Amino acid sequence: MRENPLILIVEDEPRVSRYLRSSLQMSGYDALVAPDGVKALELTQENRPDLVLLDLRLPRMGGLEVLENIRRVSDVPIIVLTANDSEEDKVRALMLGADDYVTKPFGARELQARIVAVLRRYRSAETAAPRATIYENKDLRIDYAARQVTINGKAVHLTPTEYRLLVTMAENTNRVLTHDYLLARVWGAEYADDVHILRATIWRLRQKVESDPTNPKYILNEPGVGYRLQRLTPDSESTEV
Ligand code: CA
Image (tube, rainbow, N blue to C red; front, side, top):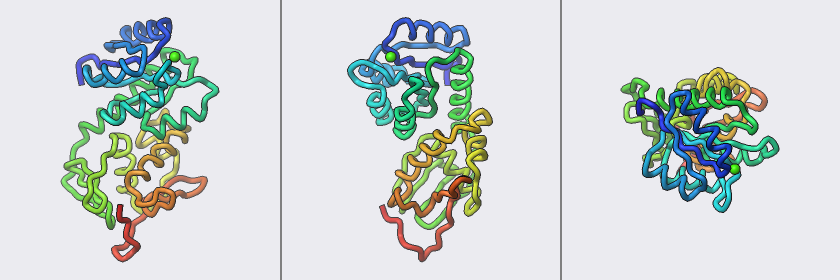
């Protein structure tokens, strides 16, 4: 991470991007602006920003498509900016790999708080002291030192947040973890009510580790309470992918 984290602002309205840029600069960030999706992809690859603020309402290539394209090439943390009335976009953005969202209109302080929280999460994922142990649960294997997850020997690529969520659940195998606990533990205390983010990240994790994500064997729902990572016995049905 640079001395001043570099934030890429993807926003087509000059009035809004100017406001965002100056408020970020005043808070000690460096900021770049991309007015459209094509430019956003270009700047993401050329400048490797520490975080992307992505407006979902963009001309030509829409925000969700930009998000998908960025995720193909980068794990950079992404916060999407959504309109108040677009609950569906919010959920889709999270499912596509956004780390967080801020609803318009928002204040500079609210945005700041989210940026700080997301950067903190990524940084702690990078610097967490590696444990020299291996977690094994039938086909699922986590190599903590290498920070690598495999299913049936096949490497699974997880974003830092997905990895943190999986590790938190693995450390508590067979125990029910409440929504609040997982949100506070993986995202931070200020996320306690944000079940959307948790649900979408669980969904993404299932797509990556479950052989049939609609009929999960590892990551189980405890309706109204939370989630539980199930210990599978060696002779239980195989989860080949
Ligand atoms: Ca816009």
